[in-house]
Each structure stands twice: as C-alpha cells, then as structure tokens.
Length: 48
Length: 180
Image 1 (cartoon, chains in turn orange, purple):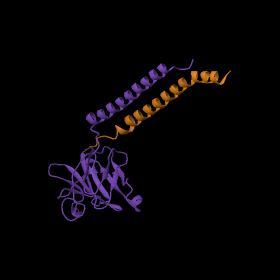
Image 2 (cartoon, helix red, strand yellow):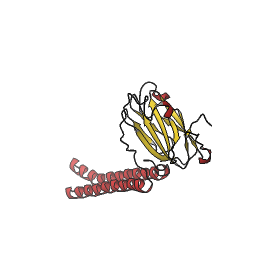
Image 3 (cartoon, helix red, strand yellow):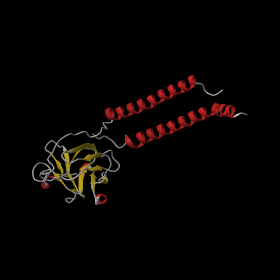
Image 4 (cartoon, one colour):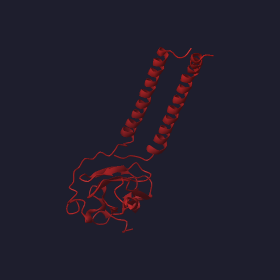
C-alpha cells in the first residue's frame, strides 16, 4: 500500500470518529449544565 | 474514499446548527429562570462617596445590620472593609423578601451566601444591592470572594436565617445577633 493509499484509508474513518467524540463531549457538557441548572440553580431561589 | 470537500462543508454546517441550537436552548433556560423564578443578576447602580460613607447617610455604624421599616420591608446594611464585615453577623427572616445592601470604603470586595444564589461584587463608590428570599433556616457563611489583600481569607460574616416567628424587631425595628 502506498503512503497516499494509506492516508486515504485512514481519512475514511477519522472524521466519523472525530464527529462521534465531539458529539459525545457536547452532549455530556449539555447534560451536566442542565443537571446543575435544575438541581442547584433553580432550587436556590429568587435573587435580583 | 475519504470525505470530499462538499461532505466536510455539510458536516460543518450541521455543527454550526448544533452550536446555535445549544446556545439558544441555554439562553431560553436563562430567560425562563429570570421571568418565572425571578433569578436575575443584581444590577443596582447607585453611587455613594466611599470617603464619607461612615460619617453620614445609611452606612453609619448605628444604622448597620438588619432593620424592618414601617411597611415591613426587611433591609440589612453591611459595610465590607479590609478585612471584615460590619456587622459580622446578620439576622434575617426565612420565607420573606430581604434586601441586602453593601458598601465599601476601601477596595473591591465580593460576597456570596453559601447555598443560595446571592452573589455580588462590592465596588468602592457604589452601593451593591441584592433582593432575595431565604428558604432554609440556619447559619449561612458569607465569605468575601474577591481577593482584597493579605487578610482576605479571614474576611467572612455569618447570616443567621431564623423562622419568621423568631424574627422579632425591637422598638426601632432593628434585629441583631446579640439580641437573641
């Protein structure tokens, strides 16, 4: 396999893995944000 | 075959949509907290002369602490100074709207009350004001959270939240920790 073909083969999979990792990271961050929002921020009550 | 340029642009556009969606959802959640639960950042802009605040006006020593006005409004006035709060203990009633007013004659301080959303900066030249309702009784710690000098770590006060039936103002409408 030439280096070009090897690169081609690697690039076929890499973007999918990167997208899955990014989606998981954003998902976990969003869930954590809403857990703090619902379980800590709102119950602490009004302030202005 | 590797992803072509068109496919990459498509996935980037999808990500842009996801990012806008996430920011929009968070903004909506914050607007909901503000409108329905009345959780808003304190935004009082009220100048005061830091050089004379201890000599005249509402932040003189005799006027500090908690006071109930004729219309039943509970207001606590506190001076934050290097490296203490005056007074160091404040009594407030539970389940009742309370106004906390802070001023400083020296440098920038900040306060938070543990376990609540009360959190504000105290900037020389301005009165910081926070309205809140304390729902849990007990002693809450109120530390300075803005580094204000070498004694910063020793700078804290206590907020004593008492049940409404134990909150008894004297003839002048004042309530202090010593009176209990």
